[in-house]
Image (cartoon, rainbow, N blue to C red; front, side, top):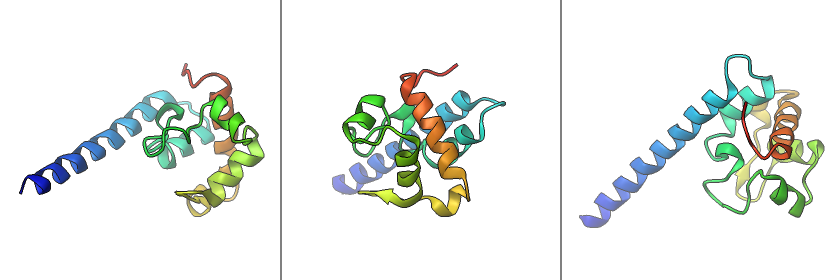
Length: 118
């Protein structure tokens, strides 16, 4: 009984956390956001809030992590967005024909600016 209650509470907490991430991304993207920012908000921000990673902390989108993994280029980030890597699935189907490039350009710019918005 207690185990079920804890599982339920954990599930609710995760859903709330994901929704908070999407809300933060919506605020960050703003009404005149770039296509890359909008795609990131729709498909990536649930796990990568402000460049972080709610699943695996070390696998974030901060510049230091991108450089450590040798993926601090638009081409490398686009490939991961398109094809996936490790536990992350690829998003080629939902990003569209050039969405991976748009997201990658936006992500790299955000990483270079330490994920500060505005």
